[in-house]
Image 1 (spheres, rainbow, N blue to C red):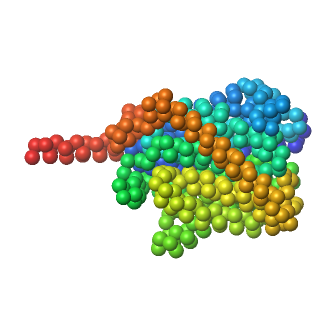
Image 2: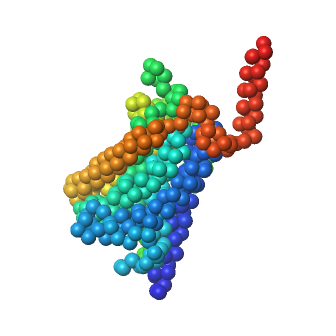
Length: 431
């Protein structure tokens, strides 16, 4: 083994660990953005579903995404099921490390999809969808772009997954929000929306910081090596995109709402990270700032749009990962430089014309529609077979901690609250 092989393997393993730690960020993000009565459920189901997706990706998903498909290779991989740790020809790092890195990405995409399930789906729905998403939805898209499939043949640029990971997860989340319908109390009879505030903004802020740090594994780790220190350049663009998204969302919320909205500012940071993910290895630093800044503005108006359409998206998965993922993918068609466009062609602003923009748009449409349609069909069938994806009204009101798991995430606080409510009910009865 050469020093380069070992260094590449070590760096990519660090990236894989950082991406897996992002699951912790998503736990805090979803928990902080929702209500206290569902906190334990969110934490537990996230760990459980990541475990399920890990096993399915090992058995089936990796082969479908990165295996050889023979005559069907432009559509799907069909080799190396039940990954055995074999080394990959032409890859200058450990095959097992590469597998773990890709497994982490699949797990993140599934976690994003579950944003559309939040606070109202049965635990069984999470478990079954974890299996089917990890076989039917994510692997084909990963193969089309990263596994040598038809979009790769067209030169589709997606350095670390604005399309493969984020748009795929968001499209699945959209299917879930439509079929599950809004949470109790989200919309009034006249169509106006009520704000259902998350119970802990500190959790949400900490989650953004954890995700921001984990994103260096997500993006810079996608270099799969240390040659020329290019991972540092990718990390630079990643940080600039996140920072610009944060500032832009703060500015637009301050102008429109009259206040610097904290949740919007945090969503701006995530939107900047999602948007720069596709382009971090293809654009100049100034373009990373522009891409992140536009993402921060888009996420503000996107969240308002989905609420106006009466779509209940508790953690803004559709806007942060969907809208920003689309913009980030398209941005390569404008900003990819001649020097960095090792895949595809330069963008419009670098003399490449509209060709790359067309390829990027084709990828967005194909992947977005496939992920949405496949997820919708899966969930529709599940809904019919399971007699509903959603918990009962009573279970939703008392919270999924108790109804699905029999214990609270905050036992002392919520049991005290229950006791107060019980005492009030008894007092009212005796009076």
